[in-house]
Every structure is written in structure tokens, then in C-alpha cells.
Length: 326
Image 1 (tube, rainbow, N blue to C red):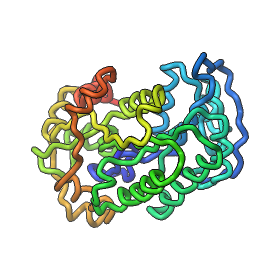
Image 2 (cartoon, one colour; image 1 turned 60 degrees about the vertical axis):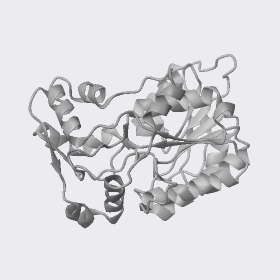
Image 3 (spheres, rainbow, N blue to C red; image 1 turned 120 degrees about the vertical axis):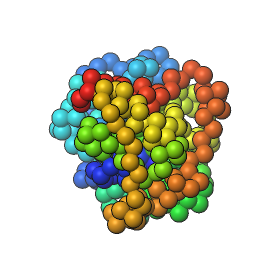
């Protein structure tokens, strides 16, 4: 469960929905941006799928901060977000998540690619189809390394439909010949923004008991982690790494939001019956989070990656809501 919420209702969003999802283009001519993105040792670009979305955008920013050349897969190079990326120096490739030929063209000559899939436009079967197109394109293009963004808990037999679809893609990735790393985010902090209006009115609504910890991740932390992987891909080849930045309870989250806003915020538990009426998939996810939940070893993650800055929920709340408005 990672960020970009699936539903604009408090507490039921899914942690990692990209905005680059519709597959309206079949061709992938490469268009160079205006910046000089090449560096010794890193001359080949990294292809980023979903580059104008939450996860892909965070990865692209982190790569640029490290001076890496980037190639952004977009649906429409004339869109304002795509034009902005080109103006900042990114190459553009046009294509959709299910168009294997366009994806392979975009991957040719790339040092690596960051990819993700989504079930929120057309369902979990479509998400598996996206994954298969991406994996097939990577093989066709002879891609040196693929970083695939899944979700923490996907391989645990969770029973959550949009976890299980990612698990299918993970299994087929592991069975193939393309060198890969799987990064598996937990619940993104930004999912809270699905209930932003309620938060500003003083209520953080989640389908969790007030004292139940929820492992969560900052999008920029994901971006920095992927950039670290792509700085030394051989070190991470074949690994699956679950990611979390912090694990506050709803009461702790509400307290930090109140501090950031300068006015009271309290947590409120959304009844699971209400979640079930809205989405069976989201209900399964929250049943999982209320039960076994994510199992990221936060201590080991920080020990093994001491150079990364991990964003606390408090820091995210203050950056997002500091000053009392957004």
C-alpha cells in the first residue's frame, strides 16, 4: 500500500497509485529535453514510468538530484506536466503501461528502468497485464536492470486483491532473465490527503484503532532509496526490500497534525462496515492492516542504509500542513 489515494474518502486510500495509467499511445519516439543530463559513468538515462505521478515523480527527482540522466515515460508529450519535465532536461518517451513495443522502444539504450503497475483504472487483471507487458519489454530491450515497485506484504498471502496482483508480477519477474530489484512500499503518508478536508476540520479518520501502529513511507524516501539502488544495481540484484519510514498510531498522527496546524485534531476510527460498503479490495486491505499488517524491520532498514534520510510522520505533517493551511 503505497501513495496517490485510490478513493477520495478518508482512511480507505491505497498507498501507491500512480497517475500515469491510461494506455493511449502505442509509439515511443524519444524526445530529448533541453538540459545536458549526461555525466561520466552515468551517460545512459534511467527510464521512469509514471514520471508525472507520485512514485515515479519522487524517483525522477531523486535521480536528478544525483545528477543522473532521466527518460520519462508519458502518455502525452504535449501535456503541461510532460512539457515541464522536458524543460527541466528529461528525455520524453510516449507510451502506455500495456504496450510492450512502445515500452521496449523506451527502454532501449537505458541504463535501467523504474516501473510500477496499478489496478485502479481497470482492475487487478489489468494490473497483471501491465506487469507482463513491462517484463516482456524489458526482456525485448535487453534492459540492464529493472526496479519494480510492488507493495509490502504482497508475498505473504494477504488475500488483498491489489497485493495479490502485484505478487503475480513479482513471481514472473523472478522467473525471468532481466536483472531486477523489487522495492515494496508500505502505506504512504500522502494517503492521508484523501481526507484532507476532514483533517483541516479537526478529524483524522482511519479504519484502525487509535493505538494501532501503521507502518508508513514518505514518497521522497522511496525516491532516494530507488536512486541508491540504481547507483549500485549489482549490490541489489535479486533482492526484495520492504520500505517504511515511520510507524505512528492514529492518535500519534493526529497529535502531529494538530501541532502542524496549530489547532486540535483527533483520530476517529472508521467502522469497517462502512469500508466494506465502499470497496471489497479496500476492506481486505484494512483487514490485513488491522491484523498481521506490514512487517518491515525498521531498525535493520536504517542500519543497512545509514546514508538515507528517513522522513518521520511528524516531519511530513509539518512540511505538508505547517502554517495551518495547504
